[in-house]
Length: 94
Image 1 (cartoon, rainbow, N blue to C red):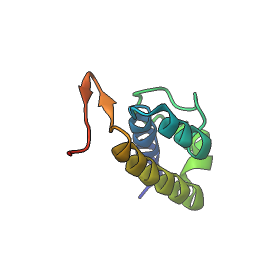
Image 2: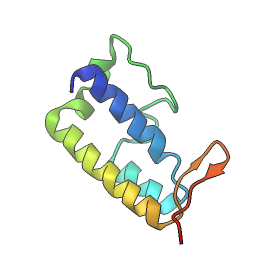
Image 3: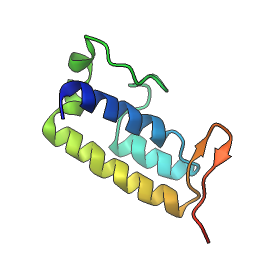
């Protein structure tokens, strides 16, 4: 995965994390993921200067940690009410 793809993935993970219904679960992302305010919400574009700005997040070790944290976040979100996107609530099936 090249730098541009990694930056897009990091931005997408952050965007999805903000759609988690359970505030405590979202707090988990802020603690172990990307600090609040580092990424403009919904901006999935990659600009020429982004690799420098996202250097910390797209290095091999940090990117792997972010992905692990994101997958853990999704598991927690599934168990606690799902995601909320554009007025559509996704909840686990009973």
